[in-house]
Structure formats: structure tokens, C-alpha cells
Amino acid sequence: SPVSRVVYNGKRSGGPRSPGAGSEIFTPAHEENVRFIYEAWQCVERDLRSQMGNERGLVEEYVEKMPNPSLKAFKPVDLGDLKRRNTQDAKKS
Image (cartoon, rainbow, N blue to C red; front, side, top):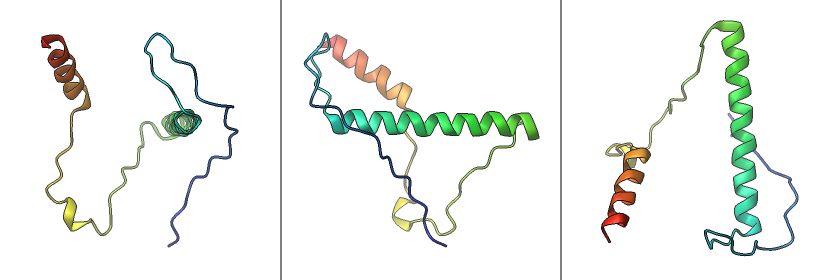
């Protein structure tokens, strides 16, 4: 079956932001990516809410029909734990 692709046709802003308190510069491409992910997540949440209203908590889990053999050893990363460790390491320095 054909693979569906999501395409974002939003407008880009004029240029990179000037550094703020965090002294980070966000390029137009970065801002577009953040906007795309935010809007896509809003659609997911809306779909989940509508499913929960109709079928009480029915959520589909995506499972590969033919898993990639090179990913057999993949172990999920706890991002919260990783962030805590990085924060603690930064405080030690």
C-alpha cells in the first residue's frame, strides 16, 4: 500500500530570531519544524479525545508488519531520566 506523507505548507518567517535570554537562535526551518510537530500533535490529541468519547479509550498501536532486523537490539530511552542526568552533570561542572 502507498505510504502517506504529511506535507506542511506554512509560511516561513523573515529570518533568524535575535538571541534572547537563552542566547539561542532559531532558524526559520527550526520554527517551521516546531510548528509542524505542534500542529500534528494537536490533531493526534483531537483524534484521541474523539475516540475516547465514542469508544471509551480505544487507541491503536502501530506495529511494523516487517520489522527492520537492524533494530532488534534497540532499547527505548527514558528521555526524562536522560534530561535529569544531563542536568545533574551540568551542575557538577
